[in-house]
Length: 98
Image (tube, rainbow, N blue to C red; front, side, top):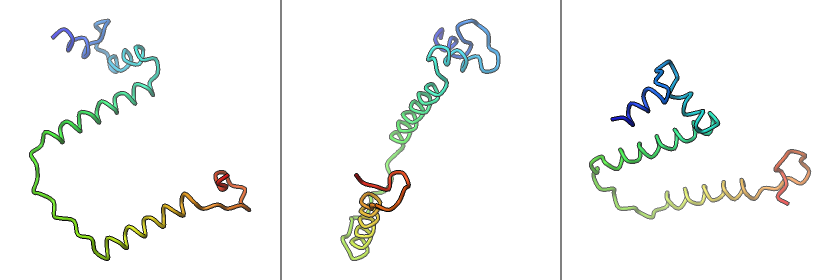
């Protein structure tokens, strides 16, 4: 109970607007780092909530057909080009592989 009151009201007992956030930023030292921590905690909580939901119907058995092979080849070609393209005459950053 005391810990919950500390989180809601803050260490100095003042419950002004944004008092909790100001106190947490003061403890962490950087508002952006605190934002990342809050986002990480929210992600963990959301994952726990999703895992607590009842399971849905079973997924269908995967089929290896022409559409699946064509999709895999297309995605592979895009990745190959994106990570393997080299433009030696370009002056843009990241246009050269070496």
